[in-house]
Image (cartoon, rainbow, N blue to C red; front, side, top):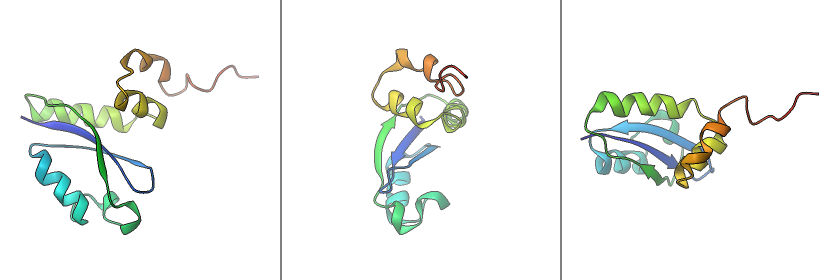
Length: 99
């Protein structure tokens, strides 16, 4: 099993990752031993706000990379389970009419 996941950091930013051991990875992030992004004290504590169990790590990694390219509004929609909002929140579509 594998999990793509989103953490909300203390500075309200999001970190997106994937792992085969979610509990261990959360402990690493919380202790400052995880990814470089979550190491600074200003980003901790971190809080798991979204994850999904997947059968294959390569699928989890691919979804991680996809979510990393999303803007904040689209990530929040995923976290809140507003899946029908995801297409309209694609980058470039949330700017409104040019004028």
